Image (cartoon, rainbow, N blue to C red):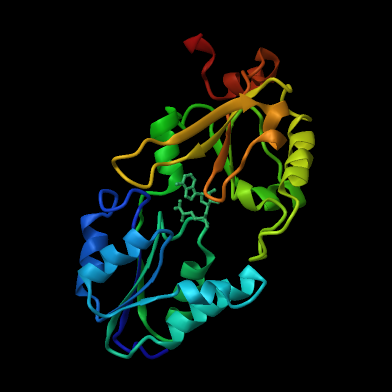
Length: 265
Ligand SMILES: C[S@@+](CC[C@H](N)C(=O)[O-])C[C@H]1O[C@@H](n2cnc3c(N)ncnc32)[C@H](O)[C@@H]1O
């Protein structure tokens, strides 16, 4: 395949405007010949436009089709179709550009097919802020992360003894529709029923929203699992479910011996 000599970079803005932007990402925005962006707040768009005079918002493409999946594909194709040989193009998304961000992965795959060099830079995601604001360490008992509709539909196996993050809770049952009319409260009841198979009804869970500006505080709402469907869930909320205490009976004594850990008791 020809290498057309062009570079296509995908970078993240982070969650908190300005302060989360890495120096590397800023450099990729400033120095690009062209910058595409898909961000969640108008101030982020202004920030990008101040860094580079040749920018294009992809926001309108987000609402072309009723099916959001088609819009994601259209966004990736628009970016890939507008890459110029020998030029340097940057695509900016909010958060980490590769975390729950299908258009960026797809745009990279298309750019590679066209012979462009590609690079994705990590950014600070909502999950990173959640660890910091809620004091959660994924290294203690592990952490599982799912898109919430996918979690229910595919019945993914998970452990209630690990931290559980359910993304896009405000779009539960509406994963790919741009439509805002869908029965969220009813779908939250379905999720509650499923979670009650693993957790007690009074298990404290959290609706979490990282602050978008350094001058604001994170929005942290704690309540009992049984009350999930009564919450006013917003599109940028992530649901965090803390782990249950691991029962002693679940600890595999044979494995402890096989790993030579018995003497550490
Ligand atoms: C399409 S994903 C984008 C995630 C983004 N790329 C990131 O790195 O955080 C949108 C989902 O991310 C989560 N999210 C986005 N912004 C958030 C915030 N400020 N606080 C908590 N969760 C957030 C929510 O679960 C939301 O439904």
